[in-house]
Image (cartoon, rainbow, N blue to C red; front, side, top):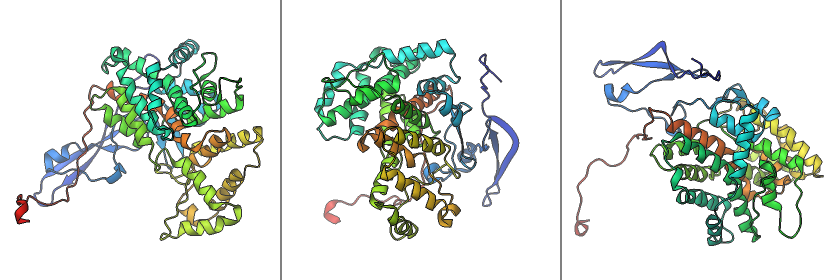
Length: 444
């Protein structure tokens, strides 16, 4: 089935295959149907398990569970494939822009020239934030983590837009999408300026999305600031690569929070908080910390020996991925940009880059890591690029949040617009005490 714009709108379909389940204690049988998407592994519909047999599935960390149906992003971890709405990430990185990718994720198709111009203009007009929101930054301690500020301010936006927060109104959902994508760079830059003790810099409508972000970060009232075009290009590429990544922890958090009917700003704030975790959005920061800990190329063999020693608790950051069992396709793209940025900005002799390159070279020839398919992921080089652009380590996860907001909103919109949506309610395997009676404190 295809819509008028030619986008494949086929939903999950039944296959001829079923799994037969036999309860050996009762002899009762059940048929579990298999459903297929447009591409990727089939899924087993287990809805009848509890009704027919009184059991739930047990899958810690959701390692083998499809939590939802989605048309937004597809990952083939074995082949190293990442598609946004069917478009390979390599093509989008080479030919598109973050704003166009944001449109694609949220509307299902690439825009024509007028659609892109209108969308860009709308995002540009929504970049300013209410002055009361800006004054809220003064209530944070000077050394508050930027992610704490961003999460709080995003949640507070719900106090300012009562007239357009009906989640069941498609127009209100569209307005929200434009607002949050437009305003998050302004909020993020304000968090950065608060940490520096510098005055906030207002957005400029004559600059593109990434140039405007860099200007708000680095401009000061006392002198002009000129954005380096390559810096803006590198940042745009990073935002594209981080825009969405299927049902990761923060995206799943946005969906779970949104499934309650919570306002969209609360759902996105929940996603920001989930992204803050070092195992998720903080991975690129951990890569730089690891490189600094290694110190020099001569220390790499000793460090890798510690990584192989399970008793050492030393981890090789920036290698391997929960989903990709092959080379992360984003890492191939970002590695090339890393060289361009450092060469253009006169930092080609950056010792961390040299160390990163040598570590990658040695690890990819080591049978221990090759056999475990521990290949470099996108975080391995992104932190080095951010550092080259002058972005402090505390802001790395904030930059990630700016990019991922496009995907979060797309997933939130898809979920809210689904007539079969249900509130998220995972079940559990209970292993606590059985029923016991209360004992008065005097008898304990």
